[in-house]
Length: 326
Image (cartoon, rainbow, N blue to C red; front, side, top):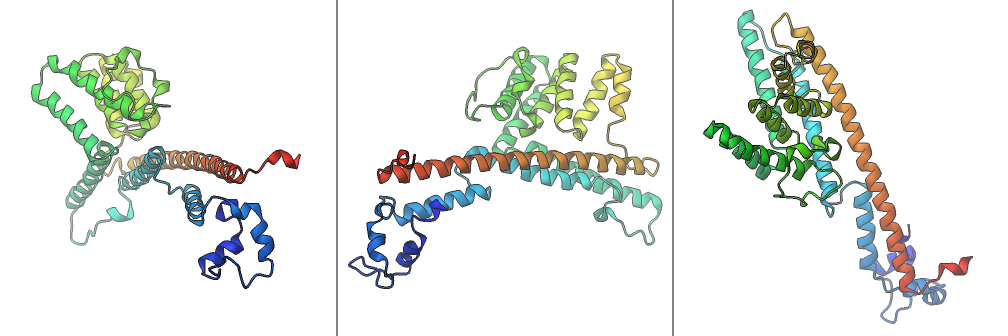
């Protein structure tokens, strides 16, 4: 309330031009008392107060772009909302997947269904690659092209360093995203507790794939497990970890993960696919609720600090001593 104006009545009159050039408010019989109020002599102008109120409004509404952290978290929430929509489209019985089967045989219906499902998967992959914007997506794809163009093991360590650099740049916990950019990291020093892979999952997935190619199977499996702990519906990591487990001769784990993979779209697996989608959409929605709740808490905490700071500045500007109240 204090941020809205030192005295809202006087502030509103001033905005409406009802104060004379001599400073007296002809319509307010208590104008003398108002003029003597030290708070009204504050050095904070109406513009200052309005700006502070606007900032607080934006904070409370989650619409403050002055902090890149909040902007990044809101983008993450929007990306996850889009991800949930695309996951839903993987259900053959989704309303948008319904096919007009008048005159079409079963094979034609299946072909159309496979096409729509492939399109949804392509969009999911595009989302995962581009979660951190077009520039970072270009970096990721350039590293992948480098890997595919060379096709020799001598290039793998260099590409691995690039992938790991992206992981730390975008998924590091408790540091500004600009910190550590370009800093060389060592895979053996990775502490998963210091990483939030949900901020951008795909560099970690590319890293797990490269570790598999390098024959570093145990490390590849560990990264796949961390990816799937964050996104249990990541179809690439689900397929990858099955292959890794088979290479490790861990058939039991391979079977366990294979049961969690995305079923096909054949008539025999249609129901299983729908169940898979329902389960993972619910998991994604719970994750979305967690992110939204976390952002709300941060916004409220920052708003409280902003109010306290502004109030203190107003008191200091008029020499107000709160010890006088004690």
